[in-house]
Image (cartoon, rainbow, N blue to C red; front, side):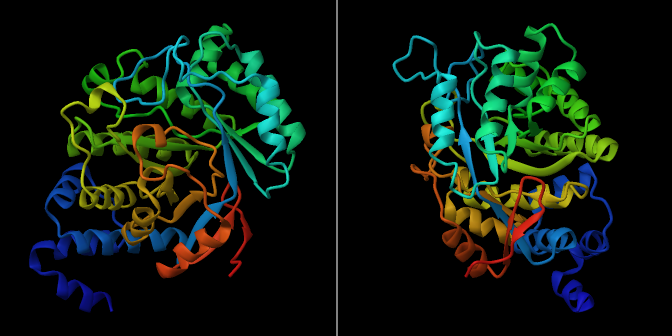
Length: 372
């Protein structure tokens, strides 16, 4: 079968395709040529083969919901539609009691994960976030707490006068079991100085995840693409992630996050990238990050139909049911204004794409295989 497949590719792409199908590692130069010039169907084919080496015909999802404690943030990134100043009528800052009430309403939902991410609030300290985690775990001990971007973590830990090692150890003791991948944006420092100059360096983001991995806390990784960066910047970003994964093995999943232009200052004069470019980005991520087990098609950002299409370009995870609990992408103009899916709807999307739905927990342990 492989020989027939390679013959059908044509001489131009046969050598590179054969190497990738044999499991050889893709380098930066080959990645740039592949993503810029290869036929889209070839990228999809190679990415699906790479996906199947990791997870076969399984596609994962989980039952989860988000807590977004506040959208007040000390940083003012150009691409962000979520951040508001403390005096804005659109700002919110939930009390711990209000957060507990959000959890109580979902306590019997079957959720296995509580995802906590918000703005970098100037007034809240590490002890506040420890209390938040403990209260969530007390109300839902069966659910894992995946909490705080590297940017949030670094700010609260430095404010407490602790080392990363000390601060992460305290949060882990409070019940933080995993860390999401947000805040990475794009690692190239020249681009960061233009789009998020206040936010900190790429190395600072990587060091938080490195220390988390050292402490046995699994994390995810992201990249914000589709703004002023080039394909070379994206490949550099993936390369830095791959090198850290070679070192620690602590990343569970990578999530490409598409820049959305509504309600943020960077959107003036910028268009959002095409669906074709989204699929090229997805395939590139699967092929380049050969050591990261999972690739997520984050449907609240893409929309349900596009997320389903991404399964044909290497994605093997649809994220979760969400239960209309996040506003980060809806505020930026994403298609999903009310981000919520039932388990049945999730499984139907996966099955109709030709894959087996597998409900997972935060750590990709199967919870159930199929409801339909």
